[in-house]
Image 1 (cartoon, helix red, strand yellow):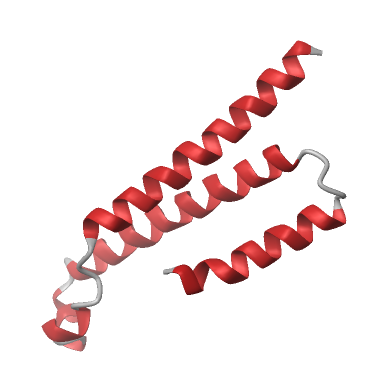
Image 2 (cartoon, helix red, strand yellow; image 1 turned 180 degrees about the horizontal axis):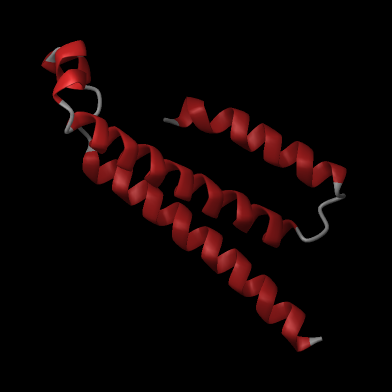
Length: 98
């Protein structure tokens, strides 16, 4: 899973560098919330596909064994959601103080 995070982190750092790290909390929060939302959408789509009999015929049962760590996946998505929401909330609170 960490390997898939590398392109996202590189893209985020490039975007932050282009904006000279202004509003980095807001930008990072949006990226984390978007990533978590996309992950939830992909999981929901995959679950819907698993309910289809045609999909089960295409993939034997043993080919889907690498999708079995639900606790870690759920924990990672929840951490991304809370971190992104916290960063956006801190940004909003800082803007309201001025």
